[in-house]
Amino acid sequence: MLYSYFHGLIAAAGLIMAIGAQNAFVLAQGLRREHHISVALICMSCDAALILAGTFGLSALLQAHPLAMEITRWGGVLFLLLYASQALWRALSPRGLEAMRAPARSRRAVLLTTLAVTLLNPHVYLDTMVLIGSLAAQHSLPLVFALGAASASILWFTLLAVGSARLAPVLQRPLTWRLIDLLVAGMMFTVAWSLAKPALQTL
Image (cartoon, rainbow, N blue to C red; front, side, top):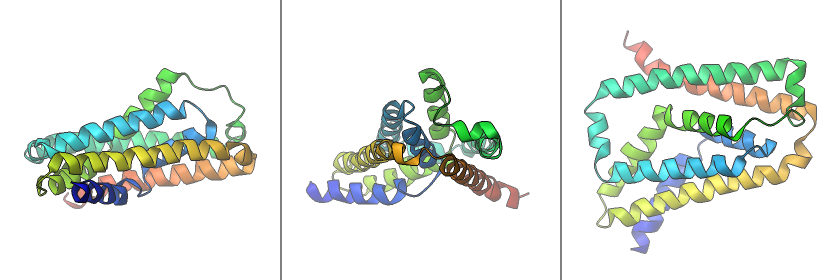
């Protein structure tokens, strides 16, 4: 049982900790202390639900309907391009330097953005449902493996949200936020390209 649990935890940690759109967003929210705990909870919950769905067969259903993956792919590309453009504008415009002093966005706006960053990214489904789900199915205790994988998500997003929030007082300088927004924009553009590239190569 412990073997399956820790195997799931380690396998998921390697996938979840890779820098991507979701991690960049959670990091930025934590640094701003803008509903960062709620953001982390949504990411954890989505990961856990997708891992369990993949473990118990939804990954096979998703692979059998490539059109659904293509719709998700291009929806994710459009959202990431929009979010990257907003981050780039904040970095290049004077207002972008006031990120820490600007009025916080509503909880609803932040949570909807979190759901979009999470669920409009096909990499999330590939990592949680297809890869982790497939690995879990090979174990004699797939549920325990899935719980280990979900635990990795919980630990990572807790560290990302709470850890970055503690660093916020040190990272309030305008230049720091300009660099953070440039980094987020670059990451979002890179992820958008990585999503679009396979489809464009087949044209």
